[in-house]
Figure 1 (cartoon, rainbow, N blue to C red):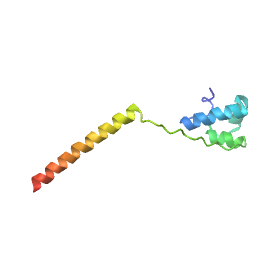
Figure 2: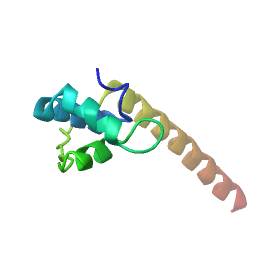
Figure 3: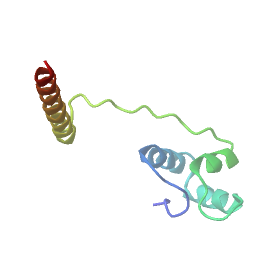
Figure 4: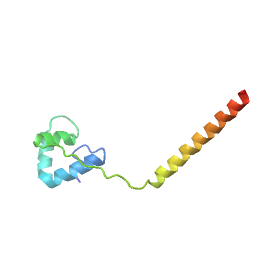
Length: 96
């Protein structure tokens, strides 16, 4: 993989690098990285800019069903909120 040459932080970066590898090839990316000034790995946007390319915009597919982790998190949040509302109602009743 070419991730050792450029900064890859997230899925968008991975997709951009994959696109760039198909579009210009690994050797062109390696040469461009050498031409980028500065220490450390360059950002993909800088590599694209040096190549005269605009970073593509990728659509993110929307998940049709919630993940099990999301469902568990929502259940925990609902439980916390329900406990707080019961506590608030009890406090209000005690004040009357």
